[in-house]
Every structure is written in structure tokens, then in C-alpha cells.
Length: 179
Image 1: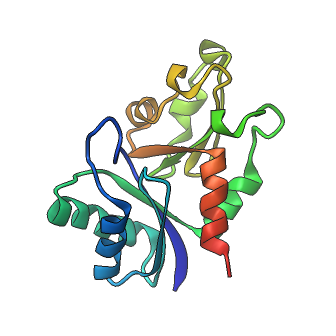
Image 2: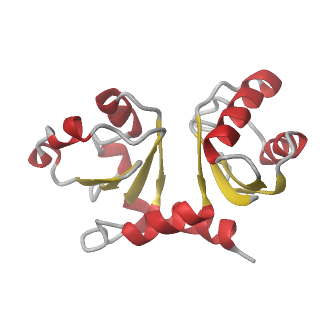
């Protein structure tokens, strides 16, 4: 059994894919997940499971579409993995505002070729770094203004992606590792 975090993409945004957090908790409990907690209204769920994060994400994604009519991608990480993501932070020396410092979570570790082929200067003032199954992004002019959105990475890398700001990732790690 491990504490995990499911990251639902695109729920409760712009009046689309509306899911109450109480309904989301109830859905996960009905799937057998334990100690289910939600954070914010944007599809962040912490739970305990004996399944791998990938298997849990697939089950949650299928249940959302089947039971709630909300077909959205779901990615998951363990609390330990979130701790490693926070510790790795390759942008800690430049990211000065947690709301503008993003972690883009990827469904798979991408081939490094397409990332290496990108010219970092083409995205300035934004900065990005790839580590494992995450892309760290610093958007000093605002998240809405960055070209380095989750959809950019999906198209460029051929993976499913979703992003959370540093403050949210830190809080999810705290919830996933609280004793």
C-alpha cells in the first residue's frame, strides 16, 4: 500500500467537466481506494492504494468517464515520487514565485531527442528543464502567457501531460506524506 496522488486534467475549468470534490472522493472510495482526500477544486486527489500509480490512474480515468461522464486524462505519482520531484527542482535558482513555477507531469519518460532539439532562447523569458517524467517550467510573465503549456509538451513528446504549480505540488506532497 502506498500514498498516491491522482492529477485529473481539465476538471472544473471554464464550466466544463464539472465534478464536485465530494463526488470525486466518493467515486475513489467506491473503487476501493482508502483515506481519500482532495485538494482545491481542480482535480487533485490523495489516496492509499496497493496498485501501481499507473494502474490506479487508469482505473480512476475509466471510472470518471463511465460513472460521471467526465472523460479526462489522469496521471498519478506516489508521495515518495512527489518528494523526489520537489528535491530535484532544477529551477530553484531562478523560480522566484511558486505560482509561476510549474511541474508538468508526463505519462511516460519521453525520448530526450525532441527536448534537446528545442532552442531554449526561443521560449525566453520562460525556462524549462526535463528530469525523468517531469518538465519543470518557470514562467515569469505568467502561466497564461507561456508557450510551454501541457498541450505543447503533449504535441512535442507524444505523451499525456498535466501541470501543477509549485505551491500545489508541495501541498500534495505534504498531504501524501502526512503521518
